[in-house]
Image 1: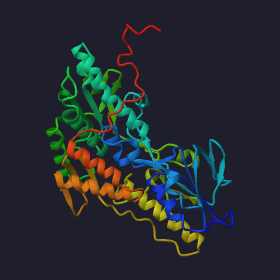
Image 2: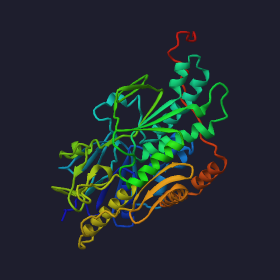
Image 3: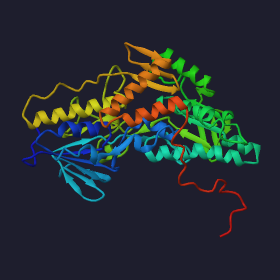
Image 4: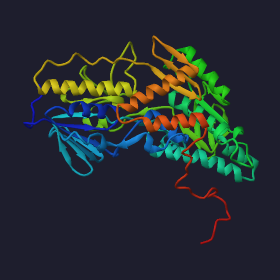
Length: 431
């Protein structure tokens, strides 16, 4: 039993993603003080981030202020800050502004993009983890068409209309399908000198099939559906190099102005903060109750936790897994505080894998149920609306989806922070 430092237990939650938010909400009714620390002031519904990147939704439709979520939970304090260290001896979370003492600590920090030792690729091939990533990718995609429209050199025009997505998991598949629909439908009649439908969209996967977490027949369907949209799927060819002109895939160099990374994630910070070893992905090995060995008052959940599942598989870094872990840890903490028997060891209940490919095309693998095509697409939409409802009213997003479905128009085609279209031209404007 952890000895409490204060009469009223103080619980610090680091990270307001799915896991941290669920834990804080579940702890809110208890006689405790909860401090929720995040470096952003909003909770992001990350599964729909690719729709911001491809102009289907605006950022405000998938993100909302953390403080508004806890307006009526008076014992939950939200802190905007960057965690820099954990003082385990003093039981304090160190941020860029001040220290926050804790009796129990929940680390739900999430993950960032992993470039397999090539961090120099990050500015050239942004990943999709934050709103700023999505808006930057959206800008690059839309500006590529604008640059192609005014390019006089056919080779440069071709390069601008080449789009490379690296990674054949759900994010890569969804991005490739969305860009194809953007080019072939939403933008098809908007330009005069170029034909957006001539855009070349390539999805690069180092493995032998797309969506390896799904059943092989669903992976094969996703492959065929992308090819029907005009996406070139390249398997068994890892990216060898990325530079300002394009990417080397296998032995071939492909000129491209827009490269998007969807090939891997890594956890940073947690292992260093706690002074413990991590695996290659930065995940911390934890006890069956999701606490850190030697520190029963500290819990790690979500992407940062290395949790065995079945066989050699680990619990996946999915929103349902993070929410389950957040609820479980909250129950463990409450049981300790209230001197009740501890819950049984954490057991992940897999609810399935799913990915959308394009209009009326998605794949759903629930184990006992597999769907594809338009039925899978509607199921995918209903599931995402259900998860949205758990945090906020989903009416706005549902209406936006319905409008996009009927009109096939992209309503968020905004380019902000635009630099000159051809910054390297010698005939720059004089001051």
